[in-house]
Length: 301
Image 1 (cartoon, rainbow, N blue to C red):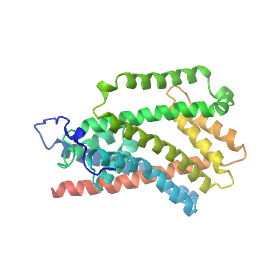
Image 2 (image 1 turned 90 degrees about the vertical axis):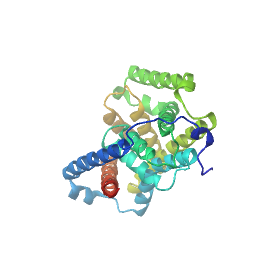
Image 3 (image 1 turned 45 degrees about the vertical axis):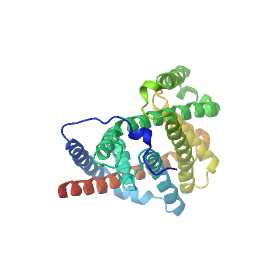
Image 4 (image 1 turned 120 degrees about the horizontal axis):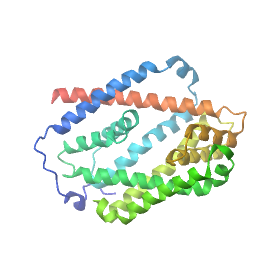
């Protein structure tokens, strides 16, 4: 894997922006907004109940850490190939993840773009690469959704009144149409050359497969009485349900799928809620540390 910026990427035209301080102000604004939202959400947490329900298994925490870091690590590998991104870029990608999860979707991309514009050693046109990586992430998700639908259809069919065939058909049509549109317009949409696009797509698909397996492993370590294979099937169904756009009551549908797989006597719903709460706390703590460090660094510059 090359550790130097690709010449094809380096030749992309730069954008001449008169005010060179705008990335600094965007970065500071995102940090302040993150701190405000994080403070509010930390104040609303039932910390005593959460601490009492945290799994004690070391395997749980190892799997959860791997699951949490999978997305920023995969993106670091991608941008390392495209830009020769240094290790300090991993913190910026963690901040991107937290911004997207805690604030608004794609606020993380804006924050990461502002960070990249301030680094003279990075490509002169980071917008094109960030845009392409984001689009290919969505496209990889579409591919995974269609594959999961084909594999999980027997389970989906057994959900009965919890899901309507019309909603499934509309969702599949939307996923297919957006994927086909991206394929037909790829020369106009994408800035990166074909070999880099294929590399990015491959990393995204590998990351989706890894996070699905790790999600199942996290749940299995917390509730080992349920076989790992069933947890992986449940993780695949979660990926499927969350990505289908026209399916109503997704949380209820996923809960029904969990009961169908593990049986009515299991404590799966509570475990899934606990894991989601732990991930939220990790988002908040990581965001708190990174935003505070960013504001301190801005004040010194």
